[in-house]
Image (cartoon, rainbow, N blue to C red; front, side, top):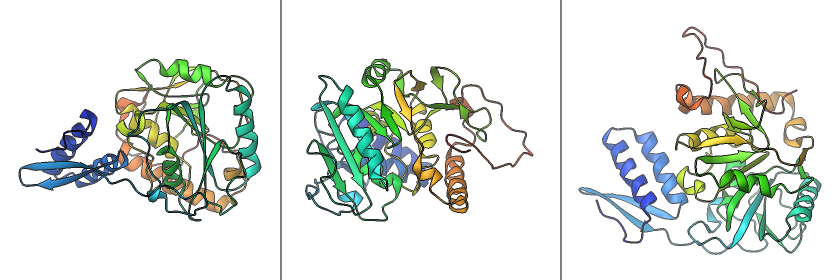
Length: 323
């Protein structure tokens, strides 16, 4: 084993886990760990007798008027935090929703230092959201998870919140999220959670407290979670089920996902209701199968598991904003 002297302990641990996965010929897991190491700003290489870690050279800063490739957006995750909270949106249309959302959070941020980040895949004009918003223009057609990750890499807040434009703050949303994340046993907190028993049916969590996954409408975490759990799986080109998959990766670290009471309104989710039924059914099923490919047997990560009978091969599932 060999590593750069400045590699953090958690990065070295990921490199060790990757080496073990390769020894066991679990190359899919090894590739995933390599991607997590790369997302944290390091390059792992195999050498005789072990591996090496080197800092990945920083890409050029994001130009102000883009568009750029998602992978070329400079990461700030290895820098010390300089804000209290980072808020993130992916813009795939309906900019008026994001304008409304940003305005509502500005109105309740108080004395907090808040970073606002909008990742835009629509090719629209930069600067439409205000001078205090980092507006990153990506190549049109960039997938949802790749766009989300590009924004998350810009995080300089100690707490990071991934948001959808349908969410409007009606009071101090920050306080309950920050309070929940003070507990080191909590990995993700948000006002919308879901529960399941069989990994097929996903229902709204009935109460505040532990849940099986936090929905991506408003998903808050400490910034280090992005390094420890890795980013969103970029094979999720559409948003659906990516939040569940990410929640399970955080729970796989031994951390809880929890619902908190927070003063928000959830308006119509445009990406669901303005996508034709055939496309959303096809894309949803594809994403769901991707989730199952990794997590179908992880009943230890479900709060109240009732595994289906072995002969039950059903694949339909339901969660969040389906009618």
